[in-house]
Image (cartoon, rainbow, N blue to C red; front, side):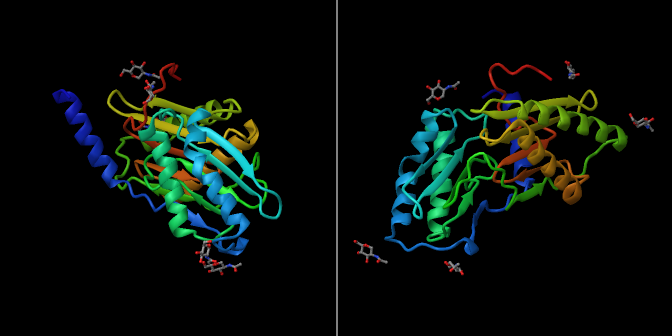
Length: 257
Ligand SMILES: *[C@@H]1O[C@H](CO)[C@@H](O)[C@H](O)[C@H]1NC(C)=O
Ligand SMILES: *[C@@H]1O[C@H](CO)[C@@H](O)[C@H](O)[C@H]1NC(C)=O
Ligand SMILES: *[C@@H]1O[C@H](CO)[C@@H](O)[C@H](O)[C@H]1NC(C)=O
Ligand SMILES: *[C@@H]1O[C@H](CO)[C@@H](O)[C@H](O)[C@H]1NC(C)=O
Ligand SMILES: *[C@@H]1O[C@H](CO)[C@@H](O)[C@H](O)[C@H]1NC(C)=O
């Protein structure tokens, strides 16, 4: 690592440590419980046992169901679009941390979700006792922001550029395929300031539904966290993050917006 990279790395660590992420899992107590040795429990264990490798084998997104009603388990797993889905250390470890998270905190709920224990590298693990494929789920959600204020001598101009970028990345993300709905983008504010954004939907959603999920998240961010210099909104069906430094890996074939 040369000196410039080292400085960049250290400054990224400082910024990262200032972002506050909540612990990302949710057990739905009202949707019914199962007992440890029930058919439902065994189906859940079965689907979990191969989920990380199934996601890996399917390029970062996997959905499947196991069993017969009323013990049928539906599961969805999604890795972030810029992580190497065939690398154990990125995608699979996030999925496995999500599974561990659910197993320890939601031992008998029929419905649960985790974004992985490392909120900075979100992935989605969800399961339910009723169909979830192709259906948007907005709740529960988790949002947070960078504690620094936006430093700009013209906030109106900053907001215009921010909004323009968000609209472009929503469009790019929602127009993805049925295997990947992911987008990143950058916009120059000044010579020395850039905004970076990353968005993703579970790719089983249609273009319109993905767009809707992301706009709901943007408008929530504006209501909770406007004026902060970065942040994120995680939902079961989509997530977004933006900041003033490049926090994602650029895809190899990335075309600048
Ligand atoms: C399910 O179990 C949890 C505790 O693990 C409990 O709080 C909840 O009320 C139960 N829900 C139902 C519907 O029985
Ligand atoms: C589940 O099954 C195992 C082995 O069959 C048994 O040891 C355990 O007591 C059972 N647990 C419950 C809660 O019934
Ligand atoms: C992804 O990870 C696999 C396994 O670690 C590696 O062989 C491959 O070169 C990586 N791909 C990229 C684009 O980094
Ligand atoms: C701030 O930016 C807005 C929009 O680009 C522009 O109309 C306005 O004149 C700028 N204000 C100042 C004080 O530069
Ligand atoms: C942003 O600014 C850099 C130079 O600082 C320039 O190379 C790049 O083309 C600009 N990007 C856009 C989208 O205007």
